[in-house]
Picture 1: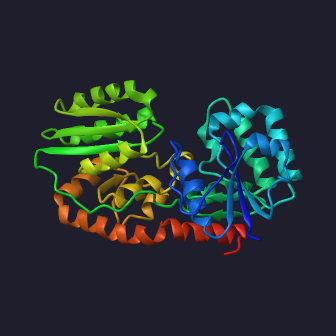
Picture 2: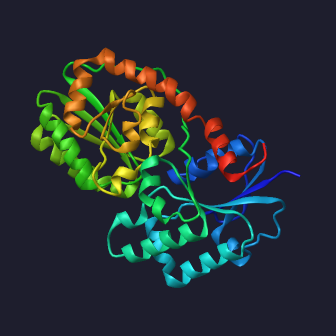
Length: 352
């Protein structure tokens, strides 16, 4: 009888993943941390998605045979706060009573988010560290929350999720097509980064495609206003985030710009995934010097001074393109779904 891996996650009903199944979700944590590796793992083990509510009702999951491991999927900061004291107590009681090896997957350092719910976020993360083994997508996050991981912590990176595209970098001399994408948006950080880029390229027609959740559309107008203060020829096109829209935008752009706050406890712990996606698409990326991006410094222009990084790429286009080509070879192996799934299988103790 095959082992069964169970993800406790945000689904409305129980689902079984088919081997190699096509997956889609607007949540990167769902795609990259469960659906893509889960579809690979389903080639050798049974993989089931179980709603949180079902787990709370039946922590042992008596209806599921040969459970080898449970993975508690990521909750958003808002969802953790919404649990309240009683909700957290119920969840940790269910973990205690499950009778199975339990792993908790973290994509962020919750307390570093700040705001009025810091105490609740810290309580959740600390208690989870005492109840379950942690899995995280990058070394920086492992270092940040490792002291709370009393049952251990494992780094399992995010897989790539898009087909590889030919590397290309041939911008016009007086025009540049930029791309930024993300399901979340830090206005001050992103606006400041692109305003600085606009100021450093006064004679260039900048066209930025900005992809985010639909509710962020008004912020694109504010971003355009900031850029035009420095460069009147700058334009921002807003596109609502979707898997297909990001793929098209990456295909159409010259450069991907990925600002992060490399000095904040929240920003410096972000994973490789957006930079990997840009490299996979064959595009030169200009990205902030967070630890995960620095691990790929030979594959992109990594610098806290983003205008300087962009200027280097424009001044040495052949070198910038060579970095992308080298990056694609690295990404092809290091971040492949099969490689990442094998890492999950090893950490979770799944049979092959």
